[in-house]
Image (tube, rainbow, N blue to C red; front, top):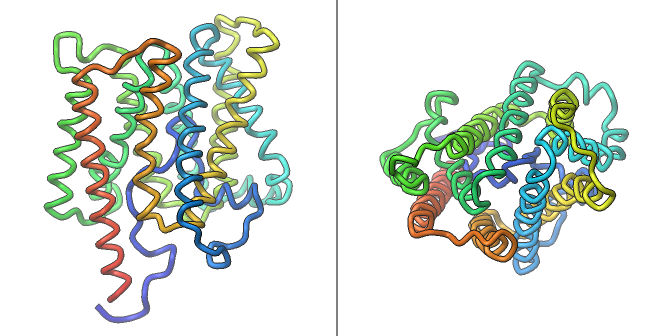
Length: 331
């Protein structure tokens, strides 16, 4: 293979969905908010990168724990409304810096709008499903997102998928089926809603690959506005006036998610993705710990086996695409 090496925007990217299911953002969001130096100017510090990665994933799961706790009392609409409003306030300084023109007239506005619809539907599915299912079950299903993204890469992006990755996709799908507990009650409505949320999240990731020229601050602002509008429309249905303490917790959903994204994006600047990306799977560990400690939800054998298969498939896909990416850059 000859010619100019691929640029950072053209080089193959791993399909691993390194984002919080219920609040995914563009990858430069952390740099925008924290005003970090460019990645090339940041000195690598692998231990710090690993630590920040683990911290970011912990914050994501803690955020979902708060969400699960709150949707037991308040409607999904209320959670979306207050959470999104808090997130937009956090983004305020960066939005001011970005400017109205870039925010309201982004590249590929139709794709951005489709992404908003997908993310809004996904977050609604996530919070509705987590009302009825253990947090670890939801996290396990969402860990299959990289598998779905890889499976969708060929029909939607035209990306070639070799035989080893096809095998990993099938392996991961088996894990999803096992995690959903194949029985007469396997495909309950909450489980199907959670799976739908994962598929919507995966489609959103595929579209995000088409929007590489759009700043992360623009992507997250659009999706936050979408969730805010949906929350404003449906929150009057069954509205429960929150106490002061719960209102603060609802606001913290947006704040904690923002800090989690900053931690993860900073981690990606301090250490190679190949080293820190696998630590995203610590989310299942945190979900199990929180589930037992707060909700009394103990993981069963089927969930453990399913999550193990999903993690194995996801790690293999990530490793395979990293290897292919290095080979492409070397040509």
